Length: 103
Image (cartoon, rainbow, N blue to C red; front, side):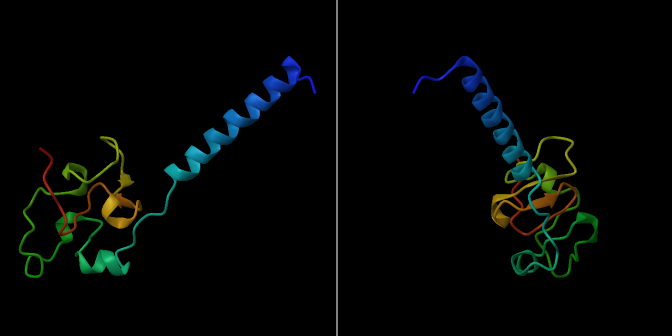
C-alpha cells in the first residue's frame, strides 16, 4: 500500500495534536488536599504561615514549597508538582515537613 503525502500530513497533525493534549492533561494533575493522608502525616499546609509551630518544630518562617528543592513548578507558578506527593500539585506558598532548602 502506497502512502501519499496527504495521508502522512494528516497522520502527523493528528499525532502532534494528541501529544499536545496529553501534555495538557499531565500539566493539570490533581491538587493536593490538606486532608490527604500523606499530606496530614507530613504536616502539609497550603499556606506556610498557618503551620502550627508547636506541632512542626522544624518549620522556619520563610520556608515554602516554592523555595524547596523538591518543588518542580516553575518560578511564579501558583501550583507545581512534588514527587513526595506522587506528582500531585502543591501550593507554591505551602509547606510540609519534607521541606529541603534549595541549594
